[in-house]
Length: 336
Image 1 (cartoon, helix red, strand yellow):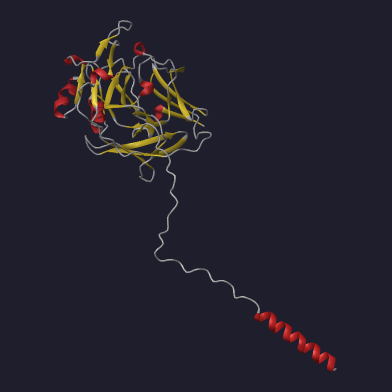
Image 2: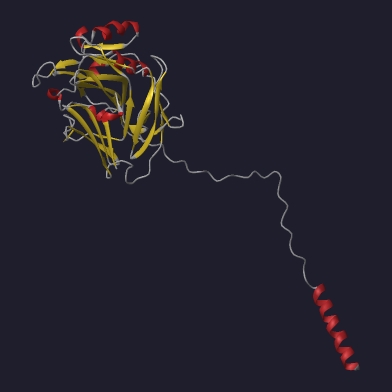
């Protein structure tokens, strides 16, 4: 018993002395209030090369004064020059069975555009909202009378404006072409750019693979979606629509179908009036995505707004846009 007590006392003393021999843990040093913390520099990404084109949300190497050009679409005028380089193109009925294009150029413009044809008031109303120079060869009486009244930046071949020339390989009146650089030489800066929104759509199959528009028996338009390009290839009367300059088929990222009232003027030339100022229904094909909605243009200088079914501004796919103005949904056919 005595041995057990002695052993216990010895163990207690060993533990007590070993505890006394341990050093307390070091405390972390107090921060120096005078020391300045230096952040590691963040690597900045180099800016993308080129200039951002607000009409397409794509980078371009050069820009020009904003110019809208009236382009012929009669069979003898095809293939046209420069349409593949346009940022925005409108197609609207001009007279009888004939439609006409108005092509808007800003980023990386072509040298030559044409054939150039005459003015109409509703095209002028569209050019006005962009504050664009407006190139044409004469025009209807109503259009010519409104050029000064509406303060249109007219570039008129019949007034001897530089830049126009005749291509003798084409028959008149489908032979007048325009050199954009010469036409815009020494022109003052211009252009109003509506605040269009852009959104990159998902890559894949489209909501509709084909859109057909029937303007008349000599102008049946087809858009066929290319998965490879993620854009719509344009055909006219079942044949690929090509640009005369490049020889390549025209493709379009955004298609707007704008429904507007048409009224025949019952004159000799079978001119029409198209209500571009006002509002109406619209359909959108945006890089494969389909939306239904509406459009509105409040007055001559106001921008045309393209809205979805909830009344919000649509988001275009980055790239070019073709706006097809038609009278009735019966002219449009969609295939999935």
